[in-house]
Image (cartoon, rainbow, N blue to C red; front, side, top):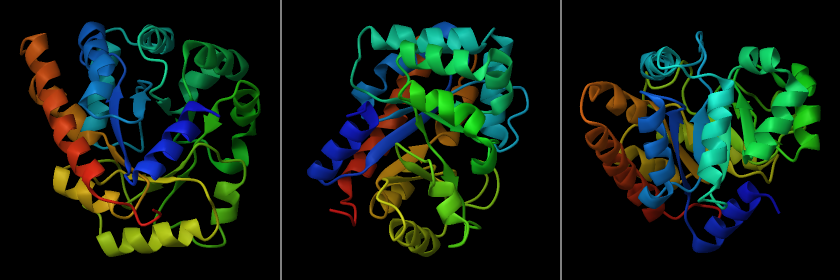
Length: 274
């Protein structure tokens, strides 16, 4: 059983949703970024989304775009991102890590080489925002050969006719984008999200994690009552941005405090699947 499958299975038995924080690898600098990464499980993270910095993250709002640029300016690249995962795995062999980003850096690295190196580093899954199901075989095939899950995205505009295409070949979990737009710029409508998650569950047994519009512990609690996972990114990286220039310990402490509050709320609500 993969780390992702094992984690979702355990959470279902416990009757709670996964808390899934997102950070950009290398933001605001390699040392601070890893100090946050290694402490996220202790702050309640069940699964970690680690962003692969890219210069043109078109699906991301201002906060995540800024985090990616800070990381790149501090020297982030694909090799260093994978090195972060390798270093993390020396102490933590159980917390799933999903690499999230865009196809351009993966293409430049080479899809077969990337899949091999990501799996050997200890990554568990991939979310590639700009690679649609019809075109992802170039990555899905080598990734599957290495045991990496390809996590697909569904959106408010993914109707019943489109869902089978999204779900075909998907694994790990399904990421439901709760808003129409880029990350961190709008608030979700609980009723709409609940209806969409229910519709997805009629066509798939994959766990459903919801993100893009979750910023506060209160919102995390709402989503945890609907879905199998709660993804929070913009609020976390925005907090890093507002603390630029502060001592490393203060940045790490502030991020972990927010994550603990988000995790507590996400874990408090029982999901409808239990």
